[in-house]
Structure formats: C-alpha cells, structure tokens
Length: 107
Image 1 (spheres, rainbow, N blue to C red):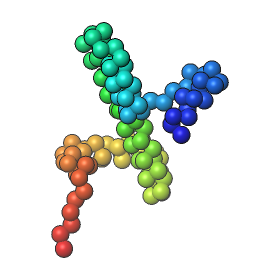
Image 2 (image 1 turned 90 degrees about the horizontal axis):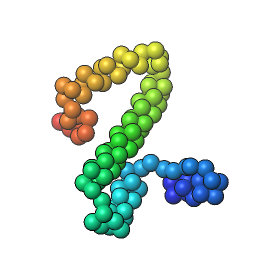
Image 3 (image 1 turned 45 degrees about the vertical axis):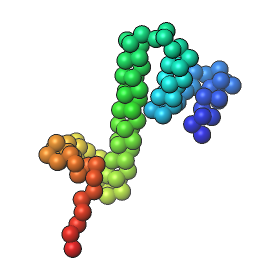
C-alpha cells in the first residue's frame, strides 16, 4: 500500500509521496550509487539529517497515536494528558532502559 501512494500521485498529478525511513534510505543508496563521485559531503550529511528527521517524525506520530488510544481505552479524561505526559517524561529520564527492554518479574 505504501508504494501505491507514489503511483497514485503520478496518475493524478498530485505531489503525493510517502515519507518512510526505509524508502528514504534506499533512495539515498540508489542516488549515491548513481551519482558516485558527484555528491559533496554536505549533500550526504544533509540527506542523512533528512532521513533522521523522517524517523523522528514517524516515531513521534506513532507514539502520539499509541498514547492517545491507550488513554482513551483506559477512560482517562483528555484534559489530564499534560499530567500523563509529564509523568512519562519524568519516568523516562529516571530510567530510560525500561522503555526499551521489558522488566522481568521474578516469581
């Protein structure tokens, strides 16, 4: 479905495109191979920063959608979202490892 978006943009003449880290990195790889020797380091660094920006945007959107669904499923009032986010940030900066690796419960 992701590849179809670009095709749909081509057919309709609309500037539709997907922004995904995998596709952007692949495109950079193809461009780097085709333009071998013609790219400056500044252009390569700028492209890598763009890919990093795409990745941060993808993570941000995914996280915000996930937290919104979790809050709604728990029946938490949306006016409490700033407090929930403050709590999560405090917990993240105190022990960030728990956000990436699950805790093991000893029996």
